[in-house]
Length: 315
Image (cartoon, rainbow, N blue to C red):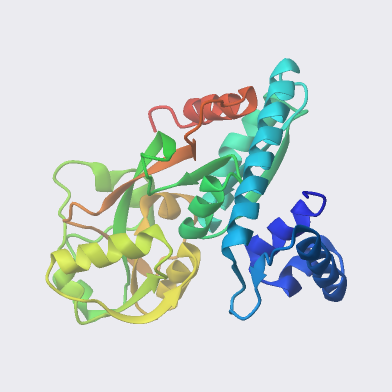
């Protein structure tokens, strides 16, 4: 019954025979024939092939639920074996958006790998919405991100970020706000976090073109809330997938965008930009390390969480 479970589950995840076949390194006709054979053996139809993307039939949903339960049992047993090994063997999958994967996760992986060199680490990058679904479905062990659902996710705060408005220097609007403008060195020195630093209202920029991230990203929600709090809808010229892309486009003079102080501290060197501290309750967010709520958390995950807490302690 579950001989071809991995094949069926891959089709379910990708919602496509073609994509699943590519991932499984088999031909699409061979994969279709395998599914057809299983459906005939079980006397059910697993997939509704009339829909795009592919969907499950009620019988197919029951089959997938059984497969997921089987995977969970297998993973629990693997976790038990890993814990017996005293961290001499094992693996962990960690996920985050592009910027998090590039600049936050490595700071945890380096000391973790030095301490536990035999643990294999897999890194997955995507947008927040996709990664949270991967975490809930237990396709990844840990996620470093911003938004959490406390009903299904256990979270550990790592550090706070300030959200800043990033503006090309040449824009005329800056002339009225020169005493509020900060440069990248100011941000690296945490000047923006000091008391007495003047904050701006983004309403001053309501006539400018905004560069925003797409809706699956946390920064999209923060950016729109900040603008709407000031009573206007931003005029968005382009939506992007990644924070670094919007920053680079702002540096080219294409428009204004929201960035984090983490980004500025890590990568900002462009002197064609200025930054503003924003007067808004939405201009801060917390970076969390998360895993799905479950009764059993193996020692590898616990060790990674402990390392992350040590790396970002008091930061």
